[in-house]
Amino acid sequence: MMTRRIIQKKWRLGLSIALWLVSLHLICAHNVKSPTALSIKEGSDDHSQGEETLLEDEDSEDLEVFRPTDKWQTLKPGQAIPAGSHVRLNIQTGQREVKLGEEESLKYRRDGNRQGMNTHNPSFTAEELKEALKKYKEGMDDPVDTTQDEDAVRAQFRPIEELKKDMEALDMLMETDVQVMRRLLNQLNNTNSTTEEKVTALLDLEYLVHQVDNGQNLVSMGGMQLVINALNSTDIHLQKSAAFVLGSALSSNPSVQVEAIEGGALQKLLTLLATQRPTAVKKKVLFAVASLLRHFPFVQSHFLKLGGVQVLSELFQTPGAESLRVRIITVLYDMIIEKELVSQVGMDLTSDSSHQERLRQYAEVSLLPVLVEQGWCSLVPALLASPEHDSREKALRTLLAMMAQCQTQYKQNPALTASLSELQKQYQELVLTEQDVGEQDGYFGEILALVDSMVVKMRQV
Ligand SMILES: *[C@@H]1O[C@H](CO)[C@@H](O)[C@H](O)[C@H]1NC(C)=O
Ligand SMILES: *[C@@H]1O[C@H](CO)[C@@H](O)[C@H](O)[C@H]1NC(C)=O
Ligand SMILES: *[C@@H]1O[C@H](CO)[C@@H](O)[C@H](O)[C@H]1NC(C)=O
Image (cartoon, rainbow, N blue to C red; front, top):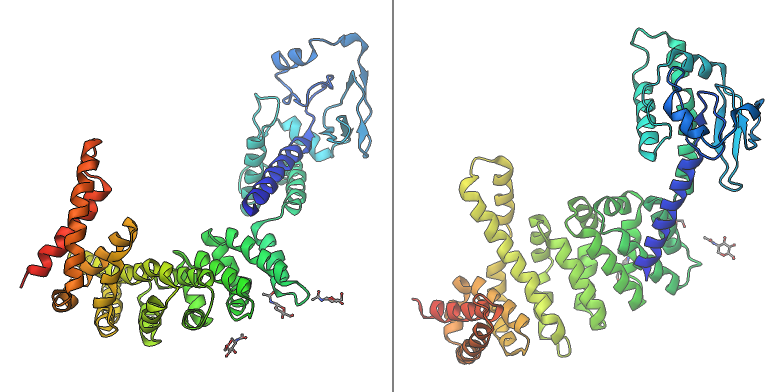
């Protein structure tokens, strides 16, 4: 719902940009008589083709010359506009309006030097206007170092200066992501807001912080601390939504990860996991924990020191929290594999100093011994009893990842041996059904390979 609201807003913004661009001031370069087109022919020495098409349906004898003043006046059909006038389209009335152009702009046109505008195309496209604005900005940064005299240069950019004013007005109409976030953070921070309003603000924030720069905006606007504080709230909906925002803002956003750690997020998240909360809250909290740990060995070490593995072990064994088990082992598995992948990359990157540093940091994350100590060699096999293929797959991968440390315990676990042979039979049959429909490398085949691998590796001495 939120998504749709924002998309609608963006669409409306897009429309107003388009309308505003149409209304941007255009400078009248030549006597133009047709009010039917916004297109104005510029250039004093080529009034051949373009102009004639504009005048096609007009009787040129009847033309009455319009006298512009320094105020905007509506142009009547058939009126000719003197060179140097400014013309704009009034969106409300659909009329064209004209006023006197500055002397400079007259001079500029006499020079016939009009960088940044397309001489041959009588109308300005949005692209051209943007291009012109860009040139204007460049011109500002790099003033008059050409042979042109200063006046001419100033004159040349005069209409663009007006254009720039319009662009600024347009910017003010748009609510940028930063402004939206400011509004949402105020709503979250306001003691008068109801819990429902705060939850809504958090969910709207969650949508925005997926973008890396908005994640960083959240930090620079002081929002991170507000979100972390919301984890402390007594309301479970606030806790849950705050964890959701954190998880999304943290995903692959290192600077946000650093800020969250400094703000004490990890400790608060672990507290939420260790105390009694609804499963829905813990799900989001696990999501935030996983995002916080990812690719961040410093946080992983911290997690170990804070007793994170123990918190997860207890949660894994909590009756009623079975639906969290796969998520929990996924967090652990990802950490194991991340370290393994980094050390594998190291084989051909041994001279890279930043890689050396990464290796050093991961070396401090000593997860596997802690897993063994906390009983995970016998906890993970229980997941094989799950009816879900996905849970079994994650369990098998985790079991394999812990093989070196757990092999002795696996061998002494008759339930594990039984589960594996049962699964082997099941998946052998499932693979056949897969092959029947022409699938050679199907999902069941993948799971069977994991089971087979477990069986083989458990036999090894
Ligand atoms: C909260 O509401 C009161 C009374 O309506 C108002 O005076 C106060 O300024 C509000 N506070 C904020 C932070 O908006
Ligand atoms: C929240 O409100 C307090 C005052 O009520 C203010 O000092 C603080 O800067 C606000 N924080 C944010 C992030 O808006
Ligand atoms: C959050 O709660 C903990 C204990 O529940 C407390 O020690 C801490 O001060 C609280 N933090 C905030 C910002 O309320």
